[in-house]
Image 1 (tube, rainbow over the protein chains, first blue to last red):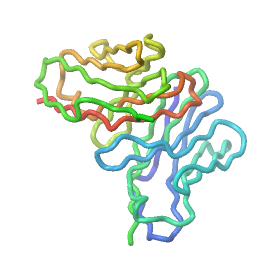
Image 2: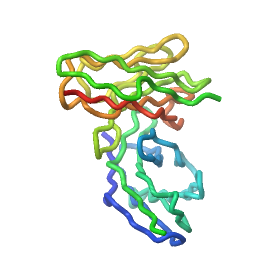
Image 3: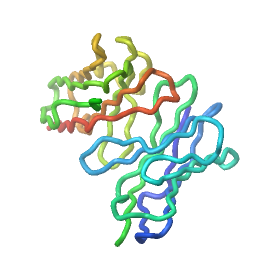
Image 4: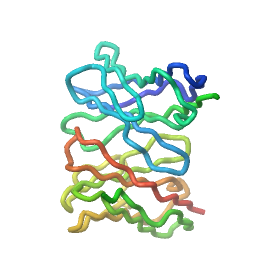
Length: 113
Length: 114
């Protein structure tokens, strides 16, 4: 079985400040981890993924995420938030033999001007 | 390069009816996955098709069925609609069925069951 927890339904941050969106996972074996973003009335857009290697992964729009195996976490970060980053963010996990992505419940990020 | 497209955008049905949703995969992608996203929740995996064969299925009843065509486009069929089937249905394509490949999502079909 595989699961993802996003402990915060809502994160608010001021424009220009750093942001963190939290994600923890549970999976048998080595995890493959993904972050997606969803804008209103739109599908999900891929941001970044961790498969293996360097624990710090860089992705689109200045986002990065840090894989921490001991804490089973994969938090999304950005050094300086923009108002346009306001959206719904989903963390997802899968593993080598699996076909499905398992998503968390999402975190609504609001960047205040 | 054309992205993932879905039709229709919105659909209203009544309980007991049947519905077919359509998806065109991104150019060069041979794998299509379908997800159900209820309001306020993350997407839930329904099934995946790889080269016209079902390649994995989530915890959905048999009244959810699908097809993939030789051009890798896909259909999701839902029979005997229930009120709880009201959701956004997302189609995603990927380069292959491998777990390391990111999935590219379409805009979704919003299904309302009355």
